[in-house]
Amino acid sequence: VTRLSSGDWFTSRTSACGLFSVCYTRVNSSVKADLRTHFRTLCQDDTPMVRRAAASKLGEFAKVVELEYLKTDLIPMFVSLAQDEQDSVRLLAVEACVSIASLLQQEDVEQLVMPTLRQCTSDTSWRVRYMVADKFTDLQSAVGTEITKAELVGFLQSLLKDSEAEVRAAAANKVKDFCQALDPAYREPLIMTSILPYVKELVSDPNQHVKAALASVIMGLSPILGKHNTIEHLLPLFLSQLKDDCPEVRLNIISNLDCVNEVIGIQQLSQSLLPAIVELAEDSKWRVRLAIIEYMPLLAGQLGVEFFDEKLNALCMAWLVDHVYAIREAATLNLKKLVEKFGSEWAQSTVIPKVLAMSNDQNYLHRMTCLFSINVLAQVCGTEITAHLMLPTVITMASDSVPNVRFNVAKTLQKIGPVLDPSCIQSQVKPVLEKLNSDEDVDVKYFASEAMAVIA
Image (cartoon, rainbow, N blue to C red; front, top):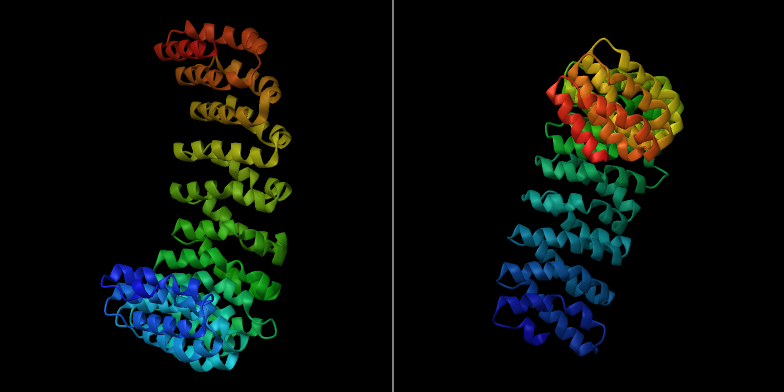
């Protein structure tokens, strides 16, 4: 270690930094003093790469050094690294700060660590401030509840208002964990007066990454703040995030609805948030409708089958006859995911009758959607339901007046073939395909012959 740490090349000195913590505990006190001196020299090295390596290993070294030397030797090193001219060194000192603070008594942390941490929180380099935000909950557990209340709440406020979006996003990500770890004795009033006002501002932040980061954790505040505060203060925020232009924000809110549901109950949730979801589902912009369809299986899983049937089932069926093809296509895949969630018995009673009714629709595009739905439902409903409920409808549609529907019948028979048993294919499917194979339309003939080849 001594040879490496005094090597001419910076690469050897960099390598040495990682070895101090390994050998320190295994040597006598005079060698320990030498090791501390060498480490101090490395912390003051002319090459930034060496100082960076020393800063990154300072936390590990601190854990093995005796407490008195930690205060006399290592803390001065930590302070000088945290004031280094290179921000890449200063940001690594933040990590060391977590290890050092967790080893010291409360009053020592206040005297020896906090001045440096204050400095890092308002550092001129955003990367150092980002590091403070990123390690915020670790710092919180290291410094203890008193300092958290006195100092860290203020730090979080300044990080949430930072001029750099990356810093605000990193701080927003920590809001829920930070609030959860606060002392229950003063947690609720502290969040309401000191943290929530800053959170409210971030809901309309100009940067979408900040809003998405907040949306992924904001729902977690409702179990901490309780039913009354959630309804009064958080629900309006959720509503505005549900209507946000950024899809990631909406997704993060919808994915975390279950923790709000546990606090305020399904009734309150349906009165406040569901109208917003239904409004988006009927939005005039088809991309907005498409986004909501993609979240539907997730919502269904969180709200349960009875609630879904009552409030959202009609929406899912309405999408099957949307005037935009992309919506109709997404709606059929949505049906498949819903059946995977709720089971084939639910499909048999709720979905399949409505899908089959579309086979008699005036509009041939809707009749084709009926076939597309059968394609995906057959995979999840199994042999029996496909053969008894869906196949007869497909066979009837083989004599449709529109060639596009007829050749889609051939394609559907090809798709559902693997689900059906061989006797059913021989007796029901093959005769239909032979009939289509002698159709007057070339496309119908082509797809019928292709289906026959695959099934055979």
